[in-house]
Image (cartoon, rainbow, N blue to C red; front, side, top):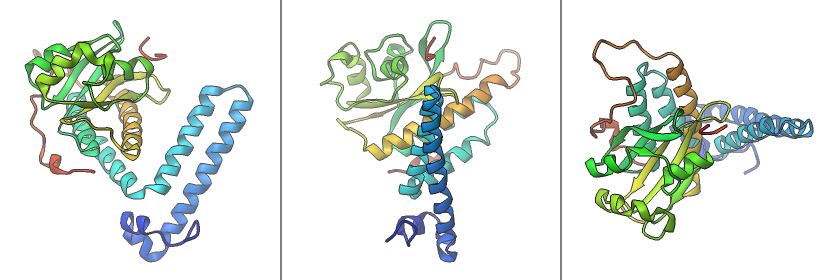
Length: 268
């Protein structure tokens, strides 16, 4: 198979395009876009604009992922498309968590939002946890947990076994009560890379998600963060006595689609 020859992955992801040969045209456009982003990164770096250069490199990497993993990419964009149709912030976060659980193949998870006044993380929505976990992680302001590290470094963090991770020791009792042994946390960032929150998925047994799944979640965190910016800048009106969106913990029921399986300046 040459660079633009038949590709079974693209035939699976876009069967109608493959039947007419249009998938090759799309792939050619993506390859051109990747080259343009990489070229722009070099020029921007030469001008001393390192942050913009890194953004261009990230765009290039995402385009390459679309080319190499079209089935996963199409699935990701399907989840994101559904999110764009949700106007209410609280419902948006709940659906964003559902999407992360489906993409990660996890049964437990939560979304935390950044409290910019304190630099701490607060649980906004969750699935599968009881009162002990929610009380323990209601406010996270340290970097011993996966979510705390992800927030502090604004970088995806994986703890493959919480019992073997020395830094996680203060949180092991809460993890044992919630019956999880592994966790990954992915920052939710806006278009400029500023931290807005963290989405975490938890696993019953020691587990390190494959690199492909982590890349999907990383990209998902960026896309969700960009949509969060819109929700936060135009909050929906509330009726008298109604709690602010994003402050209530979702009780834990997942919608029917949950049956799908897979597969600052940061805080400041």
